[in-house]
Length: 53
Image 1: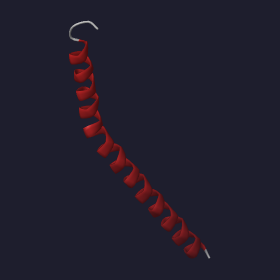
Image 2: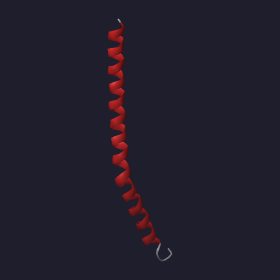
Image 3: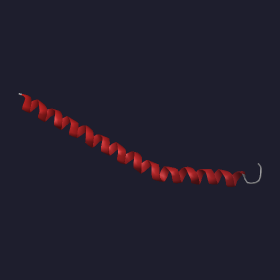
């Protein structure tokens, strides 16, 4: 193995870990918001059906 290979691998792993640390919560929050929006759309559609009758 070349000198510095282990250091480079560690650096890449740390970089990927830090990226995952802030990207994963954003993705989770976005999924929650999408679920909430879908529930609101369903409720709006139900209310529109009631008032049309």
